[in-house]
Amino acid sequence: MLALAALLVLGLKVGWAKLKSSNNFKIARIEVLGARRAGREEILYLSGLQLGMGIFDFRLANVVKEVESHPWVKKAQVSRELPDQVIIRVFEHTPAAIVLLGEPYYMNPELKVFKKLVPGDDLNYPIITGVSLESLEQANPEILAGIQNALSVWRLASSSKIFPARAISELHIDPLAGLSLITGQGPIVNFGEDGLEEKFKRLERIQVELGEQFGLLKRLDLSQADRAVARFYQKETDSLVQVENNEGAEAEAK
Image 1 (tube, rainbow, N blue to C red):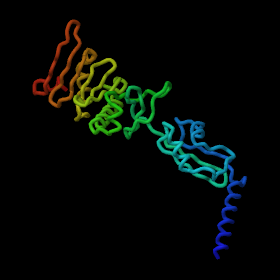
Image 2 (image 1 turned 90 degrees about the vertical axis):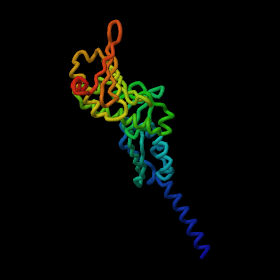
Image 3 (image 1 turned 90 degrees about the horizontal axis):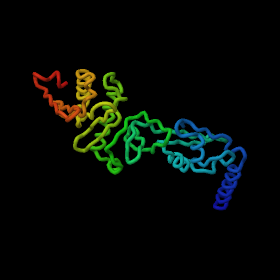
Image 4 (image 1 turned 180 degrees about the vertical axis):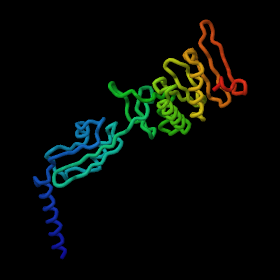
């Protein structure tokens, strides 16, 4: 019985070797699905797969690992479709922001930095500054909360007709001061750390109230709930205007 079992195992090995080398199990087609920013040729190169190689001559896990090394690839799945086809499914990162870490990088909605920008990359995303790579790697809760606040304000601006997202050139995060907006042709606006939606509405009301004079603002501090502090540009000197939310000045402050 032992001898019979040994012959059976040997026969299976020989049969499997012949099956693997059969022309019926050579790769005749490689399908790449889901690759938009990661090019098909790049994915094929990383996979190491080639037409004509044996469909059993590679490990699925190894191909997945190599394909996921592409900066745009968040996740990959690889499957054999016998007798002669391999399917590579790619799930790409979606940029949510550009974060400046000495150089610009894309960040996804999970706040993971995944790709350094190169010429030709899309720049139509919020630009976040004041963040260090170390703080992201350590998942610093204050920094992560600041990034979430920045994205929240960007979404508010994206749907605003009064203070649109295109007016924001940079969202700056400071551990002490909180979130500030750097505008292209307006003031630096400090939001602080909470009550962002109400503060954004106050920003819109102030812009409407000031009209063209809004462009003369140098800084606008909305970090406190009960007051707005504005600093205007002057020809000779800056003047500081502070308006508190009391009965006599509530409309002007908001």
